[in-house]
Length: 119
Image (cartoon, rainbow, N blue to C red):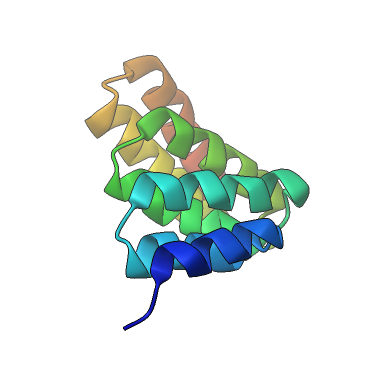
C-alpha cells in the first residue's frame, strides 16, 4: 500500500506542486487542497495551461464560482484562437447567469461572445 501523505509531503518539500496537486486530487480526493496546490503552479507561471485546466475543473467541482470567473477571464487573455475564446466566454456566461445570478456581468459576457461570433 502506498503512503500518499508521505508522497504528498515529499512532493511539497521539492516544491513539485503539479505532482502534489495530482496526489491530493487523484489519490486523496481532496479537491480544495488540489486547487490550492495548482494555484501555486499558476502563481509561478500564469500561462501554464495545465494549471488553468485543473483550476477550471476543480473550481467547477467545488462550486468556487468567483475563483472560476477569475481563471476564465485570465484564460481569455491567453486564448490563441476564436474557438478557445468562445468556449471561455460561454462558460463564463453560464457561471455569471446560472451560478452567480449576476445579470450585469452575464449581459456583458454575452455581448462579448456575440461580438466574437458575429451573432
